[in-house]
Image 1 (cartoon, helix red, strand yellow):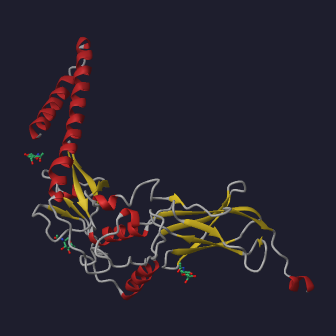
Image 2 (cartoon, rainbow, N blue to C red):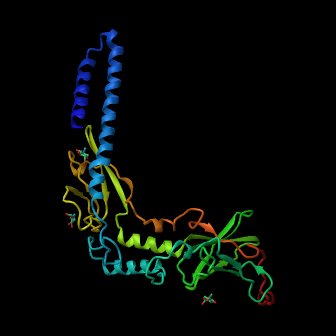
Image 3 (spheres, rainbow, N blue to C red):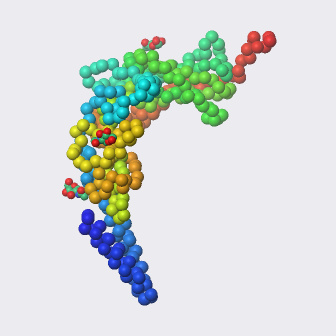
Length: 334
Ligand SMILES: *[C@@H]1O[C@H](CO)[C@@H](O)[C@H](O)[C@H]1NC(C)=O
Ligand SMILES: *[C@@H]1O[C@H](CO)[C@@H](O)[C@H](O)[C@H]1NC(C)=O
Ligand SMILES: *[C@@H]1O[C@H](CO)[C@@H](O)[C@H](O)[C@H]1NC(C)=O
């Protein structure tokens, strides 16, 4: 690798010398050809070097690291960062509370696919308006979802990730619904009625509760599930290496570039390129996912058109007609 790089440099230097004799018109074409091929050769070398650096040294080195043990603290890597200030601690807790999600009931082994949530067997019902026969702008619409598994048995616990929307393709109107998990396999979706005319309810199962549990585990136990790449370049030399935010306790004793933010303590590391220094890093892109992330059984929980982002059917009509806002009688009197 080094040798070809060296040859390229020699070629390049030689060309420069010859190009100075350009006044000999009859050589001009040959020079041009040589220059072009020299440049292409050089470019290819740079690209090859980048590719080799990526595939070989860096990828392999981080791949040797075994997954880090589950972190005791609530956020990964926090043992590497600075202690949060009281304000930051409060914000942390607030954010964690906002994304809190019900845990699956404990069981000896993960549920087989047929016992997990199946949007096709699940049902959505629009509840009749309370006390009235019709809906008006300003009312609240409620829909009830009953989740079932692939065998059609009702689910007895919550945690499915449902997204609810009320919309009118004709009017180009839409509003998000609030989903309330009753933790027993049923969910309420609540919508404000904001426009008059037709309104259609669509509830999508984005992930089953079982899939959410897998994602939760990955978030807590695999802080480096996504790795990054950085390109280092200086002159004609360049190399790409792998970068990760959290250094596992058992990382291989390999030279690293430590880009940890001194202000925030936020950790960031790249493998050091063999021939370049850490301050020659010029970019930063996503590298890919650590493999394997899922067991074969877990992978079944993430099948598009089966249990990712599938619409739940309605029993009965899936749309209502909304009448104009009712005029308050007390307002009429005044
Ligand atoms: C790539 O890996 C192979 C085998 O691990 C090794 O022999 C070779 O020297 C490596 N090349 C580079 C550029 O690191
Ligand atoms: C689930 O919980 C809700 C709210 O507590 C209740 O109204 C509903 O009847 C329950 N459903 C089942 C199947 O137990
Ligand atoms: C990286 O730098 C940070 C900040 O200077 C330091 O706390 C940390 O120990 C360094 N990491 C390694 C592996 O040396």
